[in-house]
Image (tube, rainbow, N blue to C red; front, top):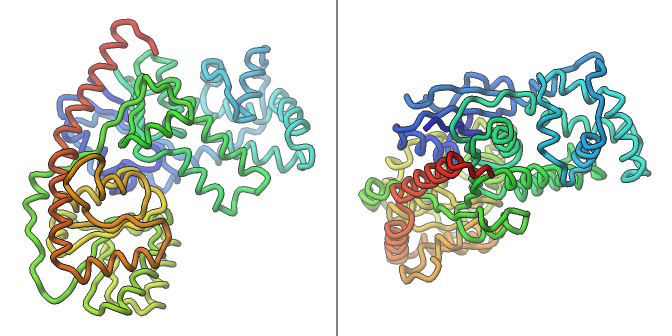
Length: 476
């Protein structure tokens, strides 16, 4: 089978997390050919890949949002004469409501530059003036025009892309990747499958609410746009998978048909990880955090919390493992905090072989403000290390279990709650017997529920089933 994987802002540009998961999936399925259709944020990423492509990746097609944003046609050439159905579909699109995506995909099946010309057309301006008058009567039209243009220029450019040839399209997030999957399904008839490791719309909503670059009066519109993209992907997909039950329920709340929904948990290489020996006693307690140094991982709270810990426990070290180049400004801020707090026992160690580094650790720490089903926690549990996590994604499910009797594998505390985090960390620092007991609980839970081979079998079955349905004439 030839599978086109559609990625947004992850593989192959960024290491860890979803990228690591996807790379492992591709390597573990040598019987299939893979095409990578990658959406990157910045053109400077071209060729700067964090992974060497496996032999079964037969094509890598990359497109960059900043390059699309820099396309500037001088004028529209009258190519857009909209009929009533097209006008209504575009009106709904610009309002971020519920457009007829089949009409949108056909209308913008043009080269990217021609699609962008629509943003200079009389038809676009007439629709925009109508919508601005109705929905934003107290906002200047110029401000509204530039806001909407910045929102939809990347989308129209992406809709001008030609889908790679594939038997199945597979997106590992909603958003732009999900829309491309829906578009590829519409134009080729090949089935489309979507996996969400986190809930894309909720993550974008949190980012937009916190950001300063989106004007306050347009934040709701931006949020609605990403919800619209997600509903488009849900509607077109033959199956929509989540990593845990609560995430699947959220997908259904957003608008996914429950009949399409599946839960396929992540899996890790239990046999290898469970063979990692316990750390040798050396008088220190070593805590590991396997994270990308980006705001959503909340490294600042981690550092402030660790400062409280070292005030009470001197023989403790924090090892922050993972890439630091994804958000250089944020990384620099974190380094300044570490230096200002005098945290000589906190280290940014960069990319490491996690299984090897795990030998040095007593337990792991995760302070994210949003997660799906973090591989770093699963890997630590498989290695017999307990975890302190924030209550995001399915972390509580991993730590405490669901209707099983394996026992608690660490502590799960509220997001950004430094006091609760510090108390949990100190509880593990001070009790080696508790670390051992909780570590063993986690190891048993991973052995029973989160093995990599089981996950692979379920995805293999999913891909074959969906392709078989498509061959049988069941066009979703």
